[in-house]
Image (cartoon, rainbow, N blue to C red):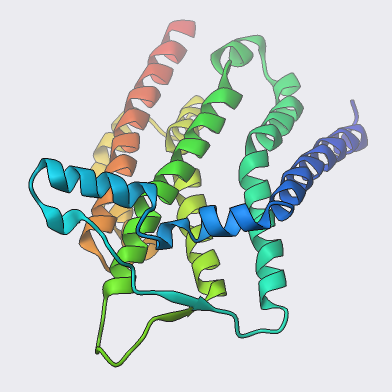
Length: 261
């Protein structure tokens, strides 16, 4: 295929990807009540799954302070078209999240024919692994980081005279940032695999800069989460674990390439 033929092929892969995202976004838009009452505003309610599990853990270890009975926060809309635009925005984000496995599959279909036979065999199951890690990261961000962050920020009080009345743009922005950030950061082992295949990183290099990476991870955790030490630790620990997994993956890639020489 010529260059223009490749561009035409890529265009149709992208068109199908956009259509998939659009279909999921339309489905989310038609389920506005469920999306907002259960998904988006769910972590702001005391009966959210995460808070229930914390309460059960508190009862088990005899620490009733882990039970969250109230989250002192209410929401408001200050723009005429605010609620409509937030409905569109939230539907688009949900469409992107649900459509991500299909989008990556389309991109992989475009890349795969250009790989050698041994590269195809080595990257078998890439779509499943990438999709699993992405959805795992999304779930971690939504069920762990988001509710803990909301609870911390809602209960952080400068004065009893100040009431938390939050614009809906704030909750949508926070939820989107935390979930998508976790989803993409959980791709670290996949990125490590392909960079190792390309010879850009080695396990020795990753070990040498382990301390530097730890500092970067902690900085990212501090940027993505509120100034709550527990939330920062919770988001840093799995990334550190994924970094160690990435070292193992890089080592296996290096050994496999050494055997093929």
